[in-house]
Length: 281
Length: 326
Image 1 (cartoon, each protein chain N blue to C red):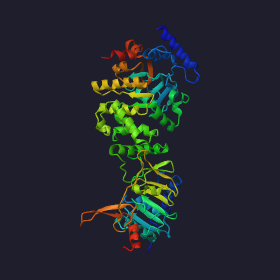
Image 2: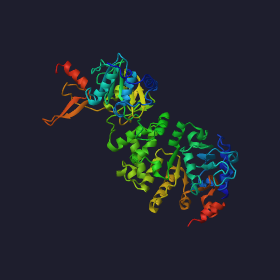
Image 3: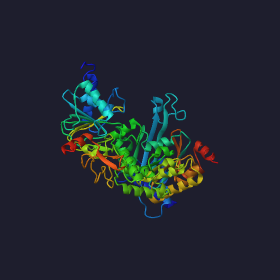
Image 4: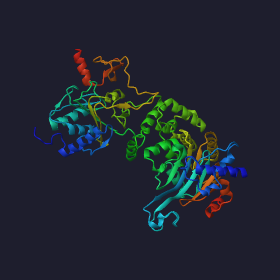
């Protein structure tokens, strides 16, 4: 390969600046650290936050996996992988267990992660109080005072109007008993995977220029009310049509021929692995 | 009358030499005509109870600008409320007042005289430049509330005060349902039971005559009078001992105005809430307030029983104000 870029696209100073923000984020779990989000060769809102974190922490021996909506082969995931591969030559994998860095949008893999793995999530709106208070200066004061009335109030309003919380994804969580954090638009199903997990999770919001983190073995509690406890999506009595897995996050599709609903694992790599181990493919 | 004056003296003594003894003595200006006497009259006859003000404000100042040696003196002559030498605006100068449980104190004055600034300083929406605020039912009046940490002030605001703003857009979250608006302070003070908060919200909405079927609607879709009533319900959610009402009836039509005034008097009667009522409308003040403060250019220029002020105004400005009443 003729070398057209510095290793991992960024110059070293940029990587250092992003790493500093990451280290600060790890030191103060759930706190949104501002950083100088760089111009990237993909549009803001397409995963630039996650991409910048990945590029800042990746080394030559890392193995990378990128997923988008649970899928390793979607356009966005493929393009991010291509860019990182072209500028680092690191190995790319679809196997969750082999990856040392997993960049994702919307899902945390079904396969539990270990201490030697880093989860990088792309975040569109890092501020859990944004709906309640549009001004950044005001939300910073609310965080400083640990005044999270707004986050609870939004949930309360949903319960009053619709009988249940309507956070399909991005259910606000309290990290380490202090900061309330938006866990990126992961489904409620994945929220508890952040709690006391053995891997490091990093969150990058490129457009909003924020980085935050959940270190390994950190307490993560979803906000809820005593008489309306937090609940994850239920797939009672349903299993994956392809691999037969239960207790996983399922996608509902319609079988065109019969017109009936069909359920499939949302995590395609997990589904393929399960099907192969059962000899189905 | 003799008996009343005697009682009044006892109470003043009590306040001066009471066991806690830390409360500032009531300002001499007020003694003659104010609250204590009004209260005694309003209360059913019975054994004399020693009554302490729930709120004592002293020497409140709020200025915008650098201040110069000339205007640092609280009594220095200004051009209205602007220092002629350095241009500093003195929105409030050395304002003091006391509020007793179940008492309504009216604040009147022209636009720009500092009424709303006073309310906002009391509610910590604005920082006071100087002054002390002691709240009996928060910490027994021990600490100056203006010097508390911002978290403590937030807690104090949630538990001690209910505020109704002149403009409902300042006091309500227009996109959240009315019930959520009422629940906000309860959530803020740690309530995590939806059913309890919905129950309390519904009963408060009943109290202010908002139909139950509209309780989950956002106030954005309500009429001005309904928005004002939702604000009042919100202000009552935590049973605060003090209500701050800033021009509650301005801009409401007469029948709605009468409803709101009725509601305020009922709240005073049922919950024994002390209230500060800001209004330009002397009719409203005459109807509600036991005692009235007249403000001009950031200072209190006259205080006394409402009737006294309206019938026999002393200060030239008050005379002008009262005689302008159509």
